[in-house]
Amino acid sequence: MADSVQNVEVDDKKTGDKKADETKSDEELRQELAAKQAELNTVKEKARPNYPRWPKQRPSWRILIGPIIFYYGIRKTEEPTSLATMIFPIFCFTLALFVGQSIVEWIDRMEWRVKLREEAEKKYKEKAGEDQQKEKNDQKPKLRPSTSSVGSAKKRS
Figure (spheres, rainbow, N blue to C red):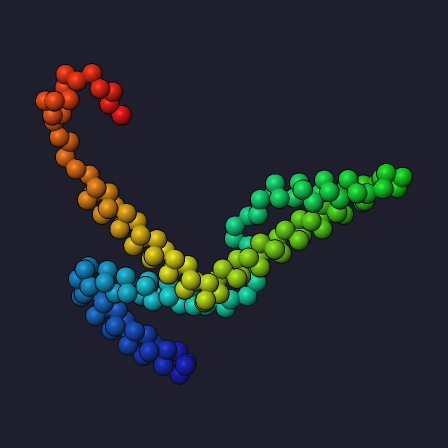
């Protein structure tokens, strides 16, 4: 019974905080919610260490066609063909494909690779901005043709 009384007292303190929350305006509550969601997103991003895991992007199955054709092309035709000898190489190539995709994504998540990608995107955007500026500067207003070239028999290029 004494434990339940202590819990009630603690609950009363919590309801006191809830009453204080109820007096807050909707805008204040939205700001607190946005701050907590931002904090949660940062925790989620930092929660997983960088290690190889199941790939997020599904590898292309067309990549398997080459090794499978090559394997069945160099296989001896005198060997008896069974379901196991047909499926096992396909299983091995598929497993290698998924492991390879996982390693590629793992390397792409490494810190140096992320920094390199960000720098490349920044340089690309700067170059695109410079190209747009050059195009704007190169565009000249169209001039009316001069009177000497209007009735001329010369070919225009």
